[in-house]
Image 1 (cartoon, helix red, strand yellow):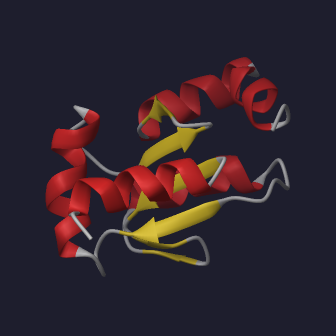
Image 2 (tube, rainbow, N blue to C red):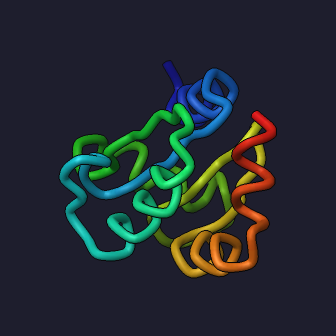
Length: 102
């Protein structure tokens, strides 16, 4: 499968998806750890892709998303943003509103 189609399918198949370094239980970078901690605080079901295990996704996703860094949070097919945006939205209550509507 073409990598861009694979990414599209992952995003379509998961209402909440985070592309991160490591796993939610064992993040491999501080940014991914903080982002996933914010998401986990709402006890919502979410999927993740460890970009360290998928070099093809790690190299193609920044171009696809027009977003250069990881983590990347996608909700209902829309890119929400990276760690700084996730944490800002968490503090403002906006992240809760988005995630709990799923």
